[in-house]
Image (cartoon, rainbow, N blue to C red; front, side):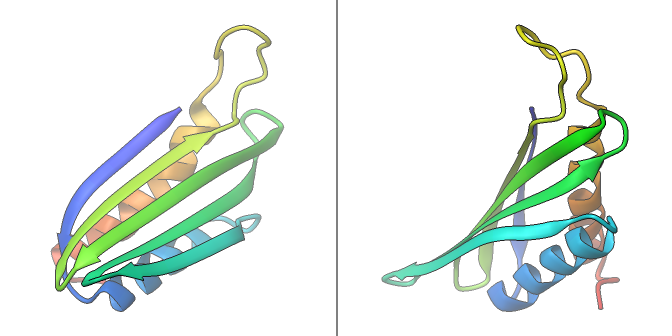
Length: 116
Protein backbone atom coordinates (compact mmCIF):
# COMPACT_ATOMS: atom_id res chain seq x y z
CA UNK A 1 0.00 0.00 0.00
CA UNK A 2 1.24 3.47 -0.84
CA UNK A 3 -0.08 6.72 0.60
CA UNK A 4 0.07 10.44 -0.16
CA UNK A 5 -1.11 13.26 2.11
CA UNK A 6 -0.88 16.95 1.32
CA UNK A 7 -2.22 20.25 2.61
CA UNK A 8 -3.35 22.42 -0.29
CA UNK A 9 -4.81 25.88 -0.77
CA UNK A 10 -7.33 26.86 -3.42
CA UNK A 11 -10.77 26.32 -4.84
CA UNK A 12 -12.16 22.94 -3.76
CA UNK A 13 -13.85 22.34 -7.12
CA UNK A 14 -10.83 23.42 -9.18
CA UNK A 15 -8.43 21.26 -7.16
CA UNK A 16 -10.75 18.24 -7.31
CA UNK A 17 -11.13 18.64 -11.07
CA UNK A 18 -7.36 18.89 -11.57
CA UNK A 19 -6.69 15.81 -9.43
CA UNK A 20 -9.33 13.81 -11.32
CA UNK A 21 -7.95 14.95 -14.68
CA UNK A 22 -4.39 14.06 -13.63
CA UNK A 23 -5.42 10.52 -12.67
CA UNK A 24 -7.55 9.89 -15.75
CA UNK A 25 -5.00 11.34 -18.19
CA UNK A 26 -2.13 9.57 -16.42
CA UNK A 27 -3.24 6.11 -17.52
CA UNK A 28 -5.15 4.81 -20.52
CA UNK A 29 -6.83 2.17 -18.33
CA UNK A 30 -7.81 4.41 -15.37
CA UNK A 31 -11.47 4.58 -14.41
CA UNK A 32 -13.41 6.29 -11.66
CA UNK A 33 -15.40 3.44 -10.09
CA UNK A 34 -17.35 5.35 -7.43
CA UNK A 35 -17.73 8.90 -6.14
CA UNK A 36 -19.32 10.48 -3.08
CA UNK A 37 -19.56 14.16 -2.14
CA UNK A 38 -21.01 15.70 0.98
CA UNK A 39 -21.00 18.90 2.98
CA UNK A 40 -21.10 19.11 6.75
CA UNK A 41 -21.54 22.71 7.82
CA UNK A 42 -18.73 24.59 6.11
CA UNK A 43 -16.64 21.47 5.48
CA UNK A 44 -16.76 19.74 2.10
CA UNK A 45 -15.60 16.21 1.42
CA UNK A 46 -15.12 14.34 -1.85
CA UNK A 47 -14.28 10.65 -1.92
CA UNK A 48 -13.24 8.93 -5.15
CA UNK A 49 -12.27 5.35 -5.90
CA UNK A 50 -10.19 4.76 -9.01
CA UNK A 51 -8.86 1.60 -10.65
CA UNK A 52 -6.39 0.89 -13.40
CA UNK A 53 -4.61 -2.04 -14.97
CA UNK A 54 -1.03 -2.51 -13.79
CA UNK A 55 1.28 -3.97 -16.39
CA UNK A 56 3.91 -4.41 -13.63
CA UNK A 57 1.79 -6.94 -11.76
CA UNK A 58 -0.57 -8.08 -14.50
CA UNK A 59 -3.55 -7.10 -12.37
CA UNK A 60 -5.67 -4.10 -11.36
CA UNK A 61 -4.76 -1.62 -8.65
CA UNK A 62 -7.12 0.67 -6.77
CA UNK A 63 -6.64 4.20 -5.44
CA UNK A 64 -8.88 6.04 -3.03
CA UNK A 65 -8.78 9.83 -2.97
CA UNK A 66 -10.30 11.92 -0.18
CA UNK A 67 -10.31 15.70 -0.45
CA UNK A 68 -11.62 17.69 2.52
CA UNK A 69 -11.89 21.44 2.58
CA UNK A 70 -13.07 24.42 4.55
CA UNK A 71 -12.91 27.56 2.48
CA UNK A 72 -9.62 27.47 0.60
CA UNK A 73 -7.90 25.19 3.16
CA UNK A 74 -7.78 21.67 1.73
CA UNK A 75 -6.46 18.31 2.89
CA UNK A 76 -5.80 15.44 0.47
CA UNK A 77 -5.33 11.80 1.43
CA UNK A 78 -4.83 9.13 -1.23
CA UNK A 79 -4.05 5.42 -0.81
CA UNK A 80 -3.42 2.64 -3.29
CA UNK A 81 -3.84 -1.11 -2.91
CA UNK A 82 -4.05 -4.31 -4.91
CA UNK A 83 -0.84 -4.53 -6.88
CA UNK A 84 0.72 -7.55 -5.21
CA UNK A 85 0.49 -11.12 -6.47
CA UNK A 86 1.77 -12.85 -3.33
CA UNK A 87 -0.58 -14.73 -1.02
CA UNK A 88 0.76 -13.86 2.45
CA UNK A 89 2.94 -10.77 1.95
CA UNK A 90 3.46 -8.00 -0.59
CA UNK A 91 6.08 -8.76 -3.22
CA UNK A 92 5.41 -6.13 -5.85
CA UNK A 93 4.10 -2.68 -5.06
CA UNK A 94 5.41 -1.00 -8.22
CA UNK A 95 1.93 -0.79 -9.75
CA UNK A 96 0.52 0.88 -6.63
CA UNK A 97 3.37 3.38 -6.43
CA UNK A 98 3.14 4.16 -10.14
CA UNK A 99 -0.61 4.82 -9.87
CA UNK A 100 -0.04 7.15 -6.92
CA UNK A 101 2.67 8.96 -8.92
CA UNK A 102 0.04 10.10 -11.45
CA UNK A 103 -1.81 11.86 -8.62
CA UNK A 104 1.37 13.29 -7.10
CA UNK A 105 2.26 14.86 -10.46
CA UNK A 106 -1.15 16.61 -10.53
CA UNK A 107 -0.63 17.83 -6.95
CA UNK A 108 2.83 19.14 -7.87
CA UNK A 109 1.34 21.08 -10.81
CA UNK A 110 -1.23 22.64 -8.47
CA UNK A 111 1.47 23.62 -5.96
CA UNK A 112 3.66 25.13 -8.69
CA UNK A 113 0.71 26.98 -10.18
CA UNK A 114 1.13 25.23 -13.54
CA UNK A 115 -2.19 23.36 -13.50
CA UNK A 116 -4.67 24.12 -16.26
